[in-house]
Image (cartoon, rainbow, N blue to C red; front, top):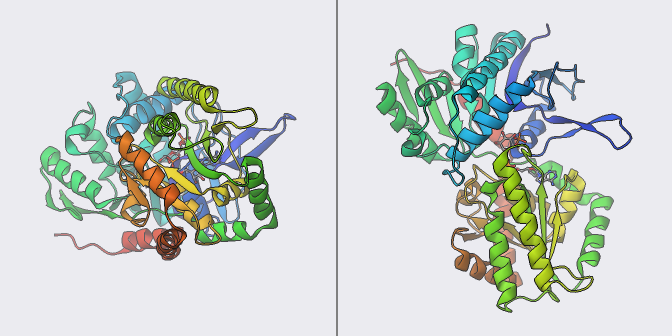
Length: 465
Ligand code: ADP
Ligand code: G6P
């Protein structure tokens, strides 16, 4: 077994096994913030990524990506249901996102979650060389840090949570709260998107485990678990290279022409997820049309909603509701050859996404709760000049960094409507000032800065109290 000095452990590998129309198997980059972020930094670092490659049954051997080795972990059909669709995405995901959808507690799912976490921990322990750094990612694998510590006390263990960590009163609802907290605190450094998350964990640890310490260092038995905020980012350089590609520039012109050269374009790009606030956004847009405050002849909306977690009931219900609403809005307000909304329920490659970002006048990113939201940062990085407005939810982690966006509370539909109108009407000088500030920020806080900050902190020696 080949071993690495850096091992990343994440539920999903950065590639998805995709069956092409001609039946051939091809690999494509998985949608979602985590895969995109880590893929950018690991492609050039000798390392191993332990993760699930999609599908069920025995895992197939996968090719290396540059200097990154892939170590697939298999899931059975029952495990996929209990661990991934169940405990991870029907219990933890909704609970961690402010319970905007009701979390479901099912005892069988817990057993699958624990068993699969053990399989990931064993795989990581196998591929980590002596003294290696093992970096565990996200809510799917919250028990893994402690399991690795038991299997391999010689390695340094990091854990990073890409989603929000909830307030203590919500976390306390979890029947297995103690194990989940202890699992995560098996790491040497626990990283979050926002400082509030570290505060929530310190409070919980004091309450449930009687720990001492502060928000950035929890003293647990004879160990110090450090915690901190490390807001994740995007590969700005990759986006710049894409922007300059003739295909992207031509595609952006073509899109602009197809949408109507004189029209103002509102764009949203999301995984089809109830945390993204798509329904609230459609309500605001439809009311603006109803009230005559915007007109189909001069404004158009593009909603990209890539299919996600399609077998989970709440996601299926959401898709039905959104598609009904898009149909209603187009039926009521569209004209022949002029729909009010273009709805695209499909994955796009990076170049086509970049072209879409370049086409937008107003990028509308209004999640009800989001750990970070990389789409907002991608939009800023994709702009070739200082045009374009970003409407951004206060409840996205990105809002703490992109303060020059038009910030909005997406639960407040009237406020959302006013903010959309404000962004559409903003003078070019104001937009340029805002865009310059946001671009400067993400340029110096890109994905490489994020990885460096986290890994440097993880390597720092800790004095035992
Ligand atoms: P989340 O991680 O919850 O999905 P983010 O906004 O942080 O939300 O990340 C979404 C990622 O998925 C971005 O990198 C974005 O470019 C990508 N993405 C979104 N929609 C699509 C799509 N239709 N096709 C391909 N990638 C997409
Ligand atoms: C979010 C999560 C990631 C996840 C991604 C896509 O970004 O934080 O861990 O990979 O969504 O979701 P999926 O269920 O398709 O992996």
